[in-house]
Image (tube, rainbow, N blue to C red):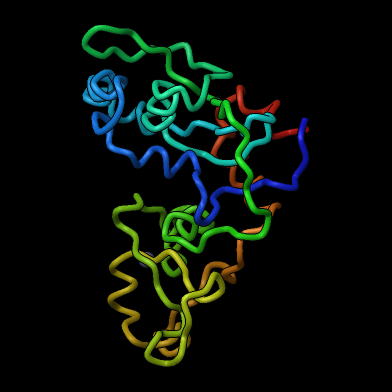
Length: 215
Ligand SMILES: [Zn+2]
């Protein structure tokens, strides 16, 4: 179903599921209080589980967290296509936990523009420090300019990598060679191929994603 044409993990300047999820619950609409109750459940880790986001055409376009996916559902922006056999409880309701959601309105996603963002760099580098090759939570990673800005290094896909604070500090204002560091992989821009690969990687434990990602 669908084609690769609009595949994207993120996009610039347009409404995206991620952007919608940033809206603070309770700040708008009658569903606000319900989603607030939902978010205050103690299932914090479950709420961070990845959810595959499909366009209205069933094309995979993004990955978000359960928490955001449920807010989108409560706001009527998306509906669940696949569910986990788990529920989370808010004050008054039990909510099934989505594994795959689909946007109800078709969202045009420009093919070429994958936003150069911290989130996407970390996603590309799989939350792995590109110098010590250890995996960290996003909060413990920063972005490193491989060629430092002071040396003319630019903020591009090819010059930014995920980096832990320790490596970032010890590298300082030097190139990897000068600091005696070696990059785990040569940094590349996102491609259609990498975004699909990343979705598979993120979803490999969830059987429910397969039929949307393996055509
Ligand atoms: Zn490191």
